[in-house]
Image (cartoon, rainbow, N blue to C red; front, top):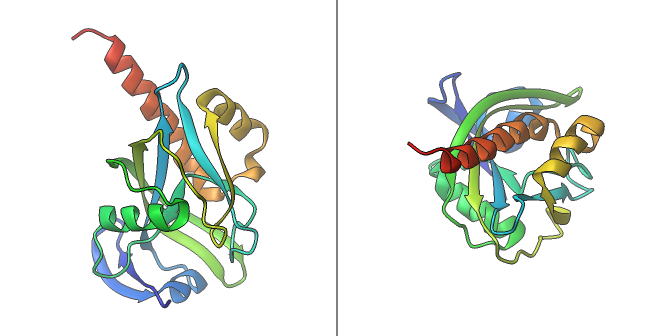
Length: 184
């Protein structure tokens, strides 16, 4: 399927649309999202991460967040996130909350770039999932402690955007716990 992505300026204002591959062949800033599902129903908070399918045109075999993609032209951010979460992990979307955003740039090869205005979304979830093998090589729940340590010890095992987005999510989860424990 030919996907037309939303081109944006540095303030995430829409300035046009282009074909997905055109956006990645030339570094054209476009809207994207990264979803992190977490489960805090047990004693420790866990995050659902995925290893990207090995045949992906970039970052194959690297660990990343639960799901990531781009809204298509004319598609709302949360609508796109809900669609992709189901397509990649067969998760009927929980309530998703945007906690942050950032611009990330990475060159994978001579004519392969990621230049994205990435919206970081979180959702509390404790149900089942079924990774789509066309998108995901494997998936697993990891604790915050494991992820924090492994990101420091093995950064090359993770997709470039994940290395920026995951610390935002870990800090957000910590802040949420502190807010619950602190009387007002």
